[in-house]
Picture (cartoon, rainbow, N blue to C red):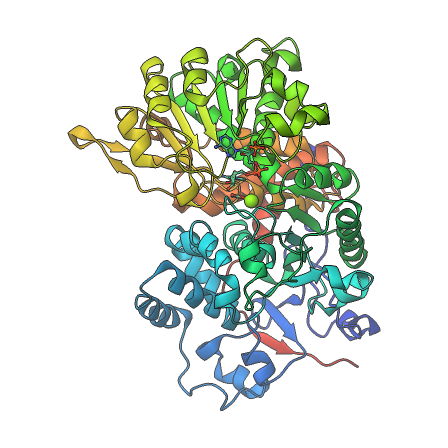
Length: 627
Ligand SMILES: NC(=O)C1=CN([C@@H]2O[C@H](COP(=O)(O)OP(=O)(O)OC[C@H]3O[C@@H](n4cnc5c(N)ncnc54)[C@H](OP(=O)(O)O)[C@@H]3O)[C@@H](O)[C@H]2O)C=CC1
Ligand SMILES: CC(=O)C(=O)O
Ligand SMILES: [Mg+2]
């Protein structure tokens, strides 16, 4: 298929090329001539590889985490860039630097102290930080991302050292289109933005939520190969309703209640206009926005700008992939998805997002007569129990507050899951007995929601019950891995949002755990999608991209792995998998006509993705001056 082919759009521009002496440099914005090179990089035959251009010298280089090499600057660079004497005399390579970093990190006794240590490294030398993270991804991801990032978010105002990313607060209204120019890097490809209203399963953490965009984007770089110079973590500080934070003098966000209604949406809108005004092609990932803002914002912007909601859409991709892979693990056909009986506990953004993705897949498989029929396979609960007739009655606001623990009546999307023929408000245990589910999903943020009785009952009816407690961090998972395996007599197919160790079962067997998380699982879903969207310069993120990504991911585990209950490929394949998902997403972008990157005959699309992926290595630094 010709769409699979592309050729490098631009030939290499050499240092000294007239374009680099043109007035276009005066604004500090280096043009990106070569598809596969990040901004500010050019290829130069003298070095036989890419070199990085910089206007800076001396401490402005050694103190810049994106340029600094610590002790690894060559003698030649020290001379040319006025670094001589500013770093210790002995030049050391990255391998030696990694030895020192690992030895120092081994002295950190708690996950939080490791988090702070890694943060400091990232703030000194991003190349070394990413090398460490990529080479030790399993251990490091659990620190820079969930579960430790949850604790770091709760304590963010206490452990604050140096800021990363940008904060836009309610006080900045009217100034945002100017503020975006305070960001020092001219090219931004991906923004992860949160309003801090529902951070993992930890609730409203206000401006402390910044750790989530920072952590997610670090994984984008490490696992997805997006260049660190082109990512921007953002908090929209609309206030917080977290009383503890409001009363803590160390809290760093606006000490005021959250904006509501039109004021809230107007502020988000001003921010969207500001960032897309400066970076028209930027991909915006909405993250950890509480229901109903999450869906409202997605619906408002999905057809206007390049954006998606991670909790709604990528969670759906990875969970669908896990369920499809589990079908194979249970000796069934993936096309039989519509025969599954799925209980989803949690009817918020993530729960509904995941289930809509499952329904999309059932419909495309063509085994249901209508979308309505597909909904019959899914049973959704919220705090009140099964979404039943009472949910419909609550559309009338006068019925609402007496009869529900919910803050607001169900919306149109949630109402699609209402089961009129089952007893109203059925609790989980009774529902399991009634529908005998094959799969149970937890997206509530509440530990203990998957009770022993519910899991034991499910396991009576299923040889291999599929149990996915997906809430984060691990302390908020609906049950632990030990519980799932114990209550299912070791037969569970288990996946959780945060990592759990494998469980030793009776008879020396191992209960394999899987991590099913929108950003970090093997493989990654949002990251592969983000990479594909960025490389193809897609103007929209389409639902087909999420569905196709799920299908790619579901095919990756081997037969042998599936037999053992391993649903996703091994950690060592992480970047390969991001590459595969991104390539498929690029194909979808071209097929659906939303890709804007210029393609020519002659090069495989997969090569284009591979060439675009950042690898942390020190490249020669070359000084240039404006004319
Ligand atoms: N693994 C992954 O990749 C991801 C995991 N998640 C996790 O999903 C969780 C929910 O996120 P999100 O949907 O955005 O949050 P929301 O706040 O939008 O929704 C939470 C839902 O859980 C329900 N709920 C709360 N307590 C209970 C209970 N005891 N029994 C049944 N239902 C309950 C709520 O019901 P009610 O409306 O009645 O209050 C609501 O429907 C978070 O913990 C998050 O970490 C989210 C995204 C990705
Ligand atoms: C994983 C994730 O995005 C969440 O828990 O919100
Ligand atoms: Mg999230």
